[in-house]
Structure formats: structure tokens, C-alpha cells
Image (cartoon, rainbow over all chains, first blue to last red; front, side, top):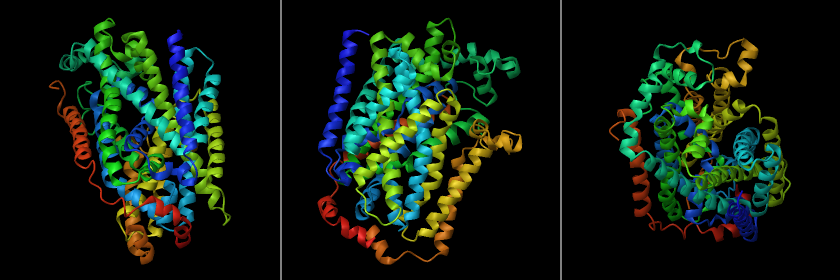
Length: 545
Length: 55
């Protein structure tokens, strides 16, 4: 590493330290620590929301998936912008902010608990976060640490420890203010790096139209010849094996949709697009951001900023991911991306190393570290509030200092996540699936209660509890015993019944969310209609200023 | 984007349309909210204990 690189690292760490300190100085009470004082600037809110949403896995993992399966993944970018930003901010944002304020809610589980006047709901929500979010956090932690250790040539365990200590410092001291300020800085770095990446990739391929027009040539020369080869004749996991698998799933080229209702279509639309796209609406660490601003104006302004941010970061990652096939074909002896890089997760890092100038590799590393740190800091804060405020504080009637309890909770949850990071480093499949598991569980368990709580005065506590249990049960069952990815990786179905999935056919490619969410929504409506309406005074307090 | 088929082309243009929608919505509603006084956070801070008691 040169002197300039060392200086940049020191300046970056110094900036994180300073922003953590600003958060610390401005944190005086639990509302400051848990909700950033409810007066966050719209730019900080939007960048924090986007940077929390986009982890290293979204850039490297899904970028690699785009190199493998092509531009049909742009449906996910559409869903992320339209549902994750526009629908979330415009329709959910302000009602969440206002109701959260009226009910004095500081966390997402507390919001649901107070809306339905049920400590059980708050504790259940907190418990769910405490159980499942550490796996999701450890997935992000492992991804970020692997890049740090590979680039700086340091031991993985040492990198994991240092990485965790830095994040712990500003989350612990600055609370949500520190988290959101650092998120905003990291979001700016991600935004700039991804914009440069797109410009340089397009330039190296002779323009946008020219680059996209070459997809069919590359497919015809590198993938189409596999049409008459059997999957059994190829080495499992190899580049040709993966491309042949995509053909068997119904994919026909990087510029085309997979065949309608094929395995690939179901995977792309239900698991990737809807699973992640809808799942984001009920993510506790994202919902809480709506409660951090003082008026609807801030949310409206954040729509503009957030929409552009997601377009530039995720849209670029996916477009460039698919375009790497064209670049490798042109500059690497007529090979496609997987043939050149070796595997899906290696495509983006390999492409950055061979196709981009050395200085950009360093910039991109910062973007990846920023993506990981911004997601992790929010996860650590959310897990800390879940175990502290939502769970521990609700046991008994004793009054606790929320800030102190949450800080202890943050430390406990970071220790658990880092331990998982050590334990599961060599089992990437389980960790990689944990993100999808968390998204599916959050949506099917929380979304009906959240949506009903915000917009339907007739929604009752019993309806909310019933829908949460149905969501938890159905999605867990689907993930453990049916879905082709999770059921196989988790292995419980195989251990109990001797098969990877209890069902067969295309249904096993349908995401858990698509099965569990309609059932949990239906149960919320039916049980609410059949039970006694909530007290009018309480409903007035929830809905009226 | 003439090289995309209908499905991918639709995703591409919907993605672009969503960004434009976000920009236009944000710009039009940049300063439209009149509710700030109704939900003043300082009064909420003062009434925190009362609200908790009522709940």
C-alpha cells in the first residue's frame, strides 16, 4: 500500500470517528439514542435508508447473479425503487412517523406492541429480530471481512475483530444519530464508486447500445453450444455447469426473460424480485427510519434522494454484472463472465481487478466496506434495541434506563454476530440463505399487522397476533421443508424425511413469502372481523392528532 | 435498449420510470407539508410519561 492509500484510510476512519462523536454529543435521551432525536435531515435519512438496504451482498452477490442469469434481474431494481422507495416512503412513511409519535414508539416492535396494546407482540417482534437478524448480520460481516482480509492481505479473524470493533465504537457511542450520519457518508462513497463503475464499463465497451447489442453474440458463442450437453457430464459448480443449469431453468440469454412460468422465471420473479422487493417493506431497521424525521416534508424530499441512490447503486451493479459477459468476451479470449471468474461471487471482484485501473480497485473496496459497515451498524443498533428495549425492558414492570439497556444489548448482539462470523466462515451456503430467510420471515410475520395497524382501524390485537403466528409457522415450514434452496441447505427435511423437499415440481421454486403472506394477511382480516373492535379511545389516539 | 426482449425491456423502462416518478414526486412535494405544528416533537417529549401511562 502506498502513502496515499494509507492517508485515505486514516481520513476515512477519522471521519467515522468524528461522526460517531457528533452522534454521541447530540445524544441526551432515549429518543436521541433510539430515534436520532426525531429531527434527521432528509438527505441523511434517505442515504441511511439506502445504504442500510444495500449491503456488500447486494453489490457483489446480486451483481454476480446478474452475470449468471442476466438482465431479468432488473425487475428487482424496479421493485426496489418502486416498492422499496416510492411505495414505502409515500404510503407508509408519514403514517408510520405520525402514529409512532402519537404512541411514543421508539422501535418497530414497540410500534406494533403499542398499536395493539400488547407487550407480547412487542416481545415476539424483538425476539424474532434477536434470533434471526444475527445470522443476516453475520452474512454481511463475513462478506465485508473477506474483502478487507483479501485486499490488505491480513488474517481473516484479525480483520473480523478490527472491523467489528470500529463499528461497535460508533454504534455504541453515537446511537442512531451516529449510525445514520456514518451511513450517509458511506452512502455517498457507494454512490460515487458505482457511478464511476458504470461510466468506465460503458466507455470500455464502446457505448451503451453497442454493449447491450452484443449479449446475443456472447450467449450464442459461449452458452448455446451447451444445449446438447447433459448436466451430468459437467463438473458441479463449474462455469459451464451453472450456465447449463440456467438453460435448464428456462433462461435464454442475458437480454431475455426466462420462459414464462419456468423454474427460472419463478425463481427470478417470486424469490428475487418479490421476496426481496416486498420483504423490504417490513424490515425493522428500515421502518424505524420513518420515525426519525420531524415532518412529511423530510420524507417527500427523501423520496427524490432515495430513488436516485437506489437506481445508481443497485441498477448499476446489475447492469454492469450482466455486461461483464460482454467485456470478458471482448477482452478475454471469447469467454463469458463465469468462465473467466470461476464462480458467481467472484465475478464482480475479478472484473474490478482485471478491467478497471488500480486506483479504482481501491475506491471500489471502500464502496464495498462502506456497504457492509452501513448495513451492519444499523443491524447492530436494531438488534440492541430489540433485546434491550423490546425484550428485556418488557419483562416485569421495573423501569430501566433505555439508553443503558440498549447499549448493553448492542454489545451482546455484536458478540453473538461476530461469534457466528467466526463459526460460519466456512459454511457460506447457510449464511447466504439467512438473508432470504430473514426477508421472508419479516414480510410474512410483520407486514399484515403493520399495514393493518396503519390503515385499518378495525384491525384487532387478536387479528395481529394470529396473523403473526400464521406467518411465522407457514414461512418456517416452507423454508425448512419445501423451498428448493433453503430446505436443501438447512437439511432438516433430509434428516427427518430423507428428501430435500416434501413437494416436487415447480412449486418448490416459489418463494416462502408468496405462500405465507397471503395466508397471514387473510388470517389478520378474518380474525379481526370476528373479534371485538379495539377500544375507540385507543383508536382515536392512534389515528387522530 | 433495442436488444432487450419485451420482459427485460419492460423492467428496464419501469426502473427508469420509477426513478423519474421519485424525482418528480420529491420535487413537487419538497415543501408542501403543513402538519409540522400539529405533531410537534417538543410537546411529545414533555408528555412522554403521560402518553405511556395512557397506553
